[in-house]
Amino acid sequence: MLLDVYPGFGIPSPSGSWRLMVAGIVRQPYMPTVKKRMLIRMLGNAMDATDEQLSSDEFVRRVTPFVADGARRLSISVRMGESSWKIVEGTPRTGRFRRWLEMPGEIVREFATTDVYGRQVLRPQVISHSGEVEVSREGEFWLSGASGISVISDVDDTIKESAIGDRRELLTNTFLRSFRAVDGMAGLYRQWAEGGIQFHYVSSSPCQLLNPLMELRDGSGFPGGSLHLRNFRLRNHVLQKVARIRWSGKSSMIRK
Image 1 (cartoon, rainbow, N blue to C red):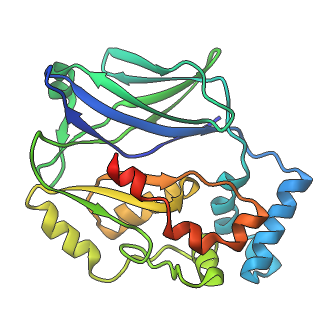
Image 2 (cartoon, helix red, strand yellow):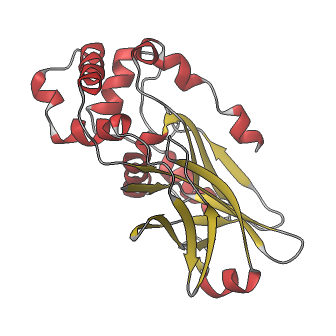
């Protein structure tokens, strides 16, 4: 099983506890099928990619989460120190989960750390269970106070060069090229973070791009913050309208 946990956020509740938004996905190891190979070939045709490009390590790493099946009927729990909480009894067919967790204030105060800007972050273990098999990943939850300022930032062509207006360029930048930060944005965001500002990165980028986006964020020096991505399935008709999809779908998450 492969477990991804999205960087989340926490907000204080009137009772003195903290509410953490825990979200992620559990996938099965990739098993090639004729249909999946056809989808990968269609993607390659849409990018006008060569056979050498489609066999490169970077392309395989990028595309595998798009064609791996979700892991269903798994339990998801969160562990902090000696305490643990089960938040999902059984994952759906997609393997995705999103739940609020109420964590006692004394545990948050004990284990929360601060980043270089003085902002608080909590890093519990998020665990998927299937019988005797456990897979765990470290979570990342940015703690917002009862008052303050948050920046809600787009990703494509805001902090990451994507060329979202050109379908072929967008697909090529997504699957074949190293992600590149937009010049000057990391420095600007760091200046804002020094004032204690929180960040919520909200994007229509597919959730399967979590790990390369995290590498871009950390490698380019962007401040940590919650990351909210779009649920996405790789299908032929989706490839035809991928640019329009990447423009849409953020408003509901921003309202939440």
